Image (cartoon, rainbow, N blue to C red; front, top):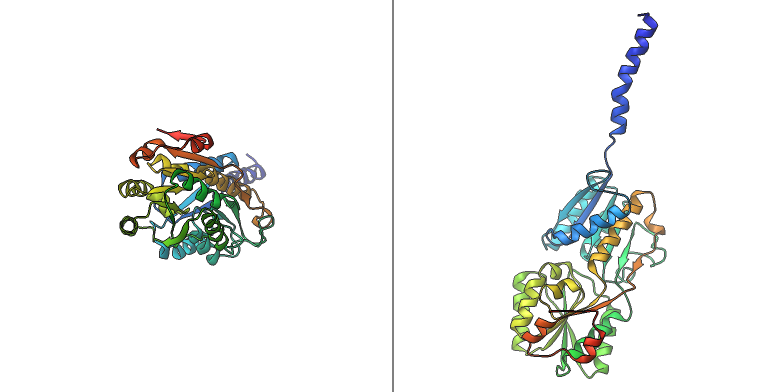
Amino acid sequence: MKRREFIAGLGGTAAWPLAARAQQRPLPVVGFLLLTEEQAFIVQAFRKGLSEAGFVEGRNVEVDYRWAGGAVDRLPELAADLVRRRVAVIVVPGSFAAARAAKAATATIPIVYGGGSDPVEAGLVASLNRPGGNVTGYSEMNIEIAPKRVALLHQFMPSATRFVMLVDPATSVAPSTFDDMQTAASRLGLLFEAVAVPGTSGDIDAAFASFGRKRIEAIIVSPSARFMALRQQLAALAARHAIAAMYWDRALVQAGGLMSYGSNVNDMIRQVGIYAGRILKGEKPAEMPVQRATKFELVINGNAAKRLGREIPPTLLALADEVIE
């Protein structure tokens, strides 16, 4: 072999591992921050959205999951860990507290939020159509949905004169939402108040015991990732204390709750996954409008109504998208 050919051969051999390493570049990483513990349906919905955007976990994207286990005070450090890892995007489905922690941790890494609160009023984005910063996402926000929950629950429980809204302090409830619900209650001749209950099992037990002593007959449970994680406990306590409860998502009715009116949480989380994928492809959150729910469903649990000793009024049956027996 000629010397020139030998050297050329060495050059080709040396270049091969370099080319192989170039093809094995690290996968982009999505940081996933949730206030509650791990829940399979949330992960499945998120992965579905990612796949619709062209990304499959383990194949062309990695996901770094961080679960706060319901502890709000853990969120800032978990968000900071994701920032230190230099993830490509942070997703925070279902929790304003997690979104706020992520936004405080970084002004440059894109954040995709999903939840029921108004992201403008909550200070996450400048506007819905042009968020303007590093946060965008999906909101259930609709000016009619909160008053509608009051009206639907009143149809089921017309004898109740006092409605209580159960609020998780870790989740933002826009003042305008509370005002709208209070106005709707006043028009029906109802007293309406909000009660803040930290999303722990013991706190919820104590709150329902208090409702029982005060003979509260109807409550509206506001959207909360922690309440979602404790949905079976909420349903059991409502039945035990003979309280008619309105929720925001069908998952709580499937767990034994009485009724829900709202958009589908699975779809919200799927949309968060789609937006995360679009950002991985190069889109900028500042230019991605906040998506808003357009379809809402009324789901009623017939067995829960029977446990309360009540029949579902025909007017509600006519409006229901689904009655679970």
